Length: 419
Ligand SMILES: C[S@@+](CC[C@H](N)C(=O)[O-])C[C@H]1O[C@@H](n2cnc3c(N)ncnc32)[C@H](O)[C@@H]1O
Image 1 (cartoon, helix red, strand yellow):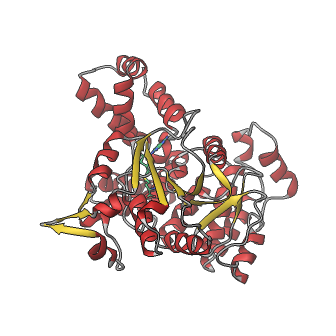
Image 2: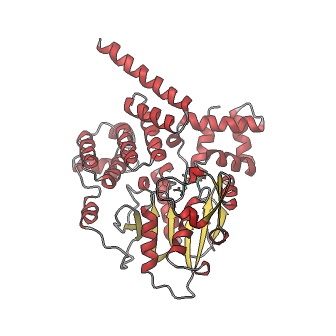
């Protein structure tokens, strides 16, 4: 039996598309679990996963990509601050916030620090922080962090809200006590039902690992958990094509903030002329001819063998490169997602998305995009090189050597066939 059946469980029940992490990596992680439980055969391990709640949880823990740090990307936290300042909160009104997925806690604790900084007392807000992995939640609840959780130059919050003991930092109790950590799967039918309605939801760096159908399911679930005028904040990499009529962008510079469709509400910051332009540009740059777009977008299911040869894709790719070159990175990401949606086997689309994500310093998400490109086109030399560099930077020298060796083989083969 191959790994396919376990890939299915991971994809259908956790949401993670194995290609976004790399099939070899996922296989390695499964093998690690098999070793722990003493299973030699993939088929018997698969039966175990399907019959044991505990083993399924252990497998999901293993698959979890917990990369996170305090004030990741900065901008969303500035938007949060403005959003809350604009709300005319009555003394006894409690602001409800959801951080999904919260990983090891850096995101929800950053949210709590922002809310304290804008003057809210602990009684005026409540943060639910949710993750599928029980392992990351253990760490989150402890609230003890190393240097790796503090990245970038702006870390003055560390002196204010942490106590240093040796080489680690303990988060202060007044921040810790505001976050309620919960172990839940966002794909569960009754996800957070009965937990109330949220004013703000942060859902960052999760949808990047999901396919479009799963992304739509999650966004619909989140919409159902939000007040009419609530704000949803997504990550850089996960806006792109959004389900119709569920959310509208708030067009706030540097962050990917949304409101529910039809929620007319005044916002803390007006769209700048640039971002208004960006909005009108969304999914509107050079595209394949209308008939091609209709074929690939409007009609489902998409026949991949046909769409991969559509005319006009090269021009579309060129126009995305032009957007990226001119610094319109958000628009370039949106266009990459539109291209990938229209041409699901476009290795070039994933490669480009990876390159743009690098410009956002979103290395993890960029690596996921390059892996998908290599999965679709094992001869995608540039993606292999990027993966070699990213692996090296993250300290995974073995993976780096592997990628470089594959790239070298491609280069040599190309030289031989030219010579
Ligand atoms: C990269 S972290 C994101 C943390 C944080 N939001 C950030 O942007 O820094 C991704 C997290 O998603 C969690 N996750 C994956 N699938 C999930 C699911 N179906 N439900 C809830 N959490 C999930 C993983 O366990 C992992 O901790």
